[in-house]
Amino acid sequence: MPSFAEVDRLKAELDALRPLTPEQEARVLQKFRLEWNYNSNAIEGNSLTLGETRSLLLHGLTAAGKPIRDHLDIKGHNAAVFALEDFVRDQYPLTEQFIREMHQLLLGEPYHTPAQTAGGQPTRKLIVPGRYKTSPNNVLTATGEMFYFASPEETPGRMTDLIDWYRAEEAAPTMHPVALAAEFHYRFVRIHPFDDGNGRMSRLLMNLILLRHGYPMTVIQAADRNRYLAALAEADAGEPEPFLRFIIENVEAGLRLMIRAARGESIDEPSDLDKKLALLKKQILTREDTIKTLWNDEVQDDIYDSLISVWIDDIDRQSQNFDELFLSNGYIGAIYSVVARTELIENPVNAEEFKKKMKNTISALNADIETISFLKKWFHFRQKNNGFDVGLLVTFNFSLESFKVTTGVLTDFTTQSSKRYWMEDVFNSIYIPNYDPSRIHEINYQLVNKVYDFIAAKLTEADTPPV
Image 1 (spheres, rainbow, N blue to C red):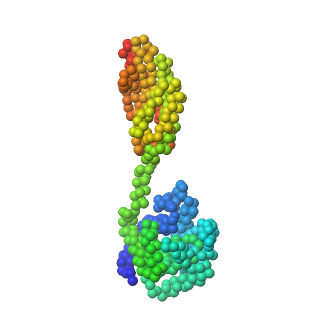
Image 2 (tube, rainbow, N blue to C red; image 1 turned 90 degrees about the vertical axis):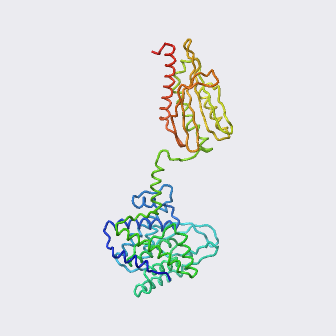
Image 3 (cartoon, one colour; image 1 turned 135 degrees about the horizontal axis):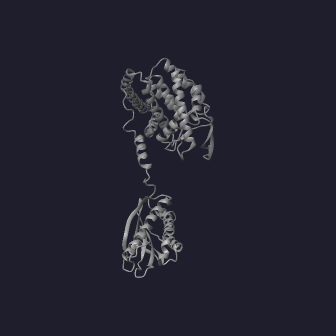
């Protein structure tokens, strides 16, 4: 038989510290309720996280993309917890009627849930909260065998027997209060009196018994779900001690938490990973540079429409005023990948034709692109003895997490390689669906001003500064 010595020692220590101040009690009860609501529902498969549960119950905020049933289950459980506290405070006797009312509060309005017919065909089952089951709710175990709970016909009598047993035990105790709570939990689960919500109800009623005997709420952690179910399975096989030890362990954890609260110490456990992760998420996921996706085939296919085309259009609009100062102009593009090396786009008639060729080349390239660049060139300035060329360059360099943009002004296209008049990294971004056109416009505005500066410098060299 497991020992209750540590439980009794902790209980005596807590009793010596009571009563807690109203602030201490409010803090620790809020923590118990939040973790009880989250963990008890998570054990049954609820998808809301502890943070989402807290946001729902404290601020009324729903979690995007999570099922409405999961939100309703959290709210219903929270209402049942408050009702249970009132029931204990008012010292009402435990009855079947109260259990059915608690179940109705837990599950709310009637709803349908997926089920199977006796022949194994999928169907839907109507769940009526507060009503004992009307059809078998046996389960198929992991070994493929059927585990049988009380039949619908047996359930009312078995529930009456359970309440009678509990009342007799309370009137003339033969068990430690923690053992009584654990035994009631197990007997209730073996009956499985309702069509849904039996696990949550068993933990609610176990806590009702513990609270009546002066123990704090006991929260079975979702992280311990496998241990919890394994201990119940051992009890089914005639070995009740592992389950009782498991419950004792959790009661001791609740007592230690309540003692820390009574002493005014922190009740946030160092192992409270959810809290630490919530802070980490706030630090990382709310930043503008948070990685949303990595460079892949889909991003590569979309980058022309979302970025390159927008950039070329803006460059073309802002640079057209220079066209009349030169005899001709045109675009050149280059796409580089390790596999395909460099693909050149040359001699387009205008910006629209250049854009078409650029898009077709990117789409046809069956390789990871590392660099895309385009150059607008102006040929032979219309001044006698000063017929220089100039061009503005935009280069996109793609890496796994992000990309950067470099702009520059080039000149002297008659030699093997152009000369740089000016070059600068001007933009760095993660991969996102859309890019700010006003930011692109501002970068290009600075770029065309650099082209003007170059032209002005060439005129100064020729001793004919612009008016």
